[in-house]
Length: 204
Image (cartoon, rainbow, N blue to C red; front, side):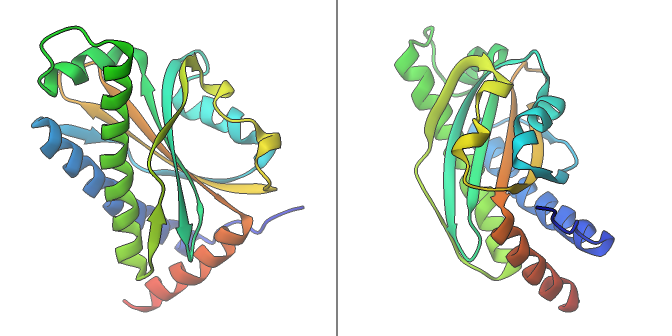
């Protein structure tokens, strides 16, 4: 099955929508941590679901060891959001959150889930607000710890043929902490996204 790519206008609009939403997510994290957050430009692509893991490796790093949290979202649009953390930054994150002692595994997991919820909640609310739709989302859960990027998702478990992949990375100024927020939407959500993006463009 082939899927029509986004038009140039649709891609530009979606990148702007994503940039605003991710900016809100970054601002929420900056407030939580009381530090400056830098964001990358959103990267957006439509990929065959069999290529999702490879695409994520190209975005994040093929040899990176990561820990990741997942949240699903539903509503007019549906999909999955992954927050993928580099291993070296967890201690920096703990320090910023006021932990004096070395984190045990349970405390580290709780901290990463809290940060994931802040990022995903702000991002999805920002997208829903701009597109004038409603989205609900699940509580975060860890799907992998200290593992390669390409092991996070198994394409055969996704009942999709294609995915809209949107990625932004967040970095803390003068710290090792890095997080990638990756949003994945299946083909029927892509078609619906085209419609709401076209409405968004026409509203200007």
